[in-house]
Amino acid sequence: MDQPMTIIEPSHRTPVYGEFDVVVVGGGPAGIMAAASAARTGRSVILLERYGFLGGAGTAGGLSTFCGLHAKVYGEHRRVIRGLADELLDRLERLDGLSQPHLTINDGIQAQAFDISSYKIAADELVGGSGARLLFHAMAVGVVMSDPDTIDAVLIESKSGRAAVRGRIFIDASGDGDVSAWAGVPFEKSPADNGMLYPSLMFRINGVDVAAAGDRPWRTVERLMDAAERAGTHTFPRKKPIVRPQRNPLEWRANLTQLSNPDGSAVDGTDVDQLTHGELQGRRQVLDAFAFIRDNTPGFGDSYIVDLAPQIGIRETRRVFGRYRLTEDDVLDCADFPDTIGVNGWPVEAHVAGTVDFRFQRGENPRGFNQLPFRMIVPERVGNLYVAGRCASLTHDAASAARVTGPCFVMGQAAGTAADLALDAGVGCGDIDVATLQLKLEKAGVYLGREEVTP
Image (tube, rainbow, N blue to C red; front, side):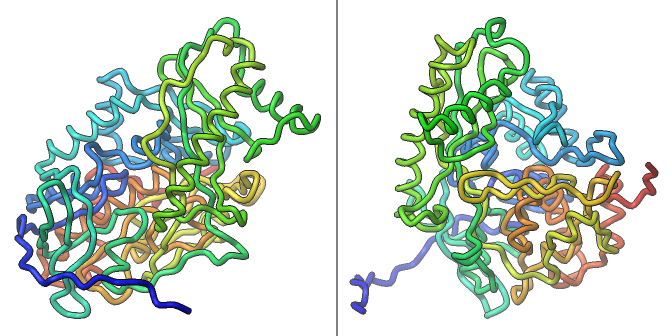
């Protein structure tokens, strides 16, 4: 096999952009909460984000829906994600950018739609108002290690050139586990025979005639697509489409694409060639799906595509190995952990080839949520690093549940709060006093799932 062509670059001195107590990489839901919670302890914090706005999949991925804020607790729908999430939702409400919760996944659990522009502003206010420094348009590209177990700096590239951001503690909220991988933390990706969750390209439709669309038109869209598939007139990349109204019912969000390589495998969000292929494929799928919806669904005849998400939505890539790996059984059996940092109520939502496989919590009338252990955000080997979000220590099937917004909020707030405790005690990230962390989280309003809940 031929060796790839290489170019030897000359060595150079990299300027230090700044030195901070806590460096957070990635401005998605985990990064937002990590930066805000760490800054509120009085620590110097910087949040590095490659786009010009926060929100991650919710904004850059066009998701426009909070999944995992709620759980179906013994048959009753309850919001179980609290703490800084309360403040974020309050800000969205004041901006008139938050819809009421709606039932989703066969009416089995609630989700909550939001206005993307409002979310960007609310996230700015939450993070900036907490005292954290924001650096947009800064792409993390590597790390510098002071020793094999300690990160000294994150390297970034921007329009201002290359720079280093030094820190005492780092929080990897990149989604893809970039910082962890560069630092040598062991990780895995799903193998080819049980591949990664398939990405999607989200889009939004405007100009819907609400009266003509009638009651529950999202069911009409699904029924029409199923009928066309059975008749052989159309082939869609994914069954179980999600087409739902936004804050203003004239506008609808559409989540019904599925992006794959020519061999049928899921597009890998860490491979630039596959990402490029996925963006091109996604736009073709959007055009085909929208044309069908417009031409066949009552109320959509004069509608148009108002927005294609800035990037395809990646559901899974690297998952680090931590002190504990959350499993599918933990999710489905509503597991408890002594080191709980919050809860997850979202079921397993596996985006497999051609469809979406939902697996809800087991039992006739389950509690509906599992606790999330502190150990899942503590990676192996590197002592001054937390990993929060979909790249935390999760199995493939557990990631199908705990990758969504709600549990990412939980992991982020816990990581930011824990960073202060580690710095205060002068210990490694995994060696803090967990009881103290739990008390601080509860004082901040986080629901740890420790109170007895009865049917």
